[in-house]
Image 1 (cartoon, rainbow, N blue to C red):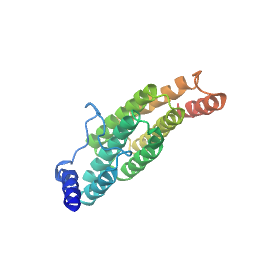
Image 2 (image 1 turned 45 degrees about the vertical axis):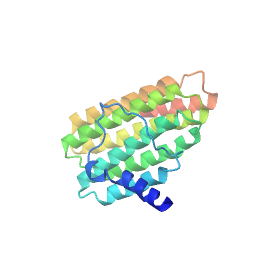
Image 3 (image 1 turned 135 degrees about the horizontal axis):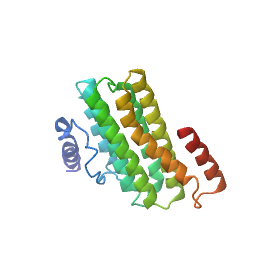
Image 4 (image 1 turned 120 degrees about the vertical axis):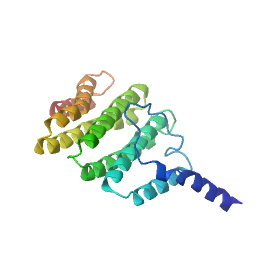
Length: 211
């Protein structure tokens, strides 16, 4: 009976795979993750994602999947921020940047529609991270999110540099919206009285190199 229940659960998680070809739109409400890293069934989500990648027929679909996976990690971070498991935010954001690294390697920069989609979703991720930051008080979690915003601004710049090499200046300017948001956040937060002196110095340095 337990084996049957497990298989049934697995089926429920895996059944939607053929239909999940497109990531959440940047204009949609991010929502929350019902299955997040603190959930006992979270390993099933990892299994499903491995299969989603395995059955991705083209590089284009693989890029879409990585966008979706990254968005899931942001959604999980949002959910974790409302629990007592703030310690799991750090590894969740590490997984987020792993997906973003994979995306950067496979996305076609000559596909203007895809680049616009990446720009929109990354800008959305940046905004959601800043919103989460403003809603939590755990110092370690806040530090992790500050670091994530800085890393995402760096990711934006690397993406912008690649676009400029291809003379895609208009797309690069669109991508710069996310980076500017992150840099402004770092600059503003660097003067926060809630930070200690070391944190302010580190954040000030990051803000200066960001612009």
